[in-house]
Figure (tube, rainbow, N blue to C red):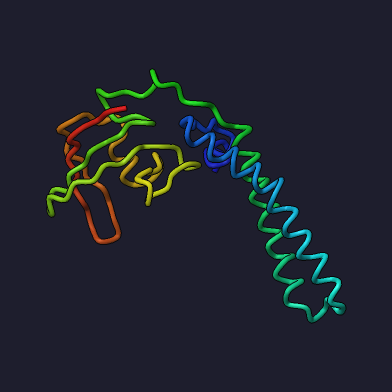
Length: 164
């Protein structure tokens, strides 16, 4: 159990782009979204009885979400370290590597970038180093075939290319 606790204190390594996105989101939440939701709450209170006012409830829930997200981002940024370009390897898969994979059964190819969980976004092709695929390919070199355990069974990927 102690290992999981220490996991929360570990350094979070971010790409320059990832760091900028998190800082931008934090700034927007603090300067724009906070004010918008405060105004919504003020307007909802002006409508009168807040005990049956769904607009007031919605605004208070949104306010709680925004404040929670601000705290999460602040904690993440406090533990963040910017990844330097020379840390990204091309001989083996490392954090920051852009990796071309081939799914062995279907032959389908996909390109992913391995990033920390704080900046992973599958639709942008950024997968976490803590995801099943991320863990499986980490430290492996081109031509390696790696098994990935998935709910539907084991999927094998071949690493075709590793670049910055």
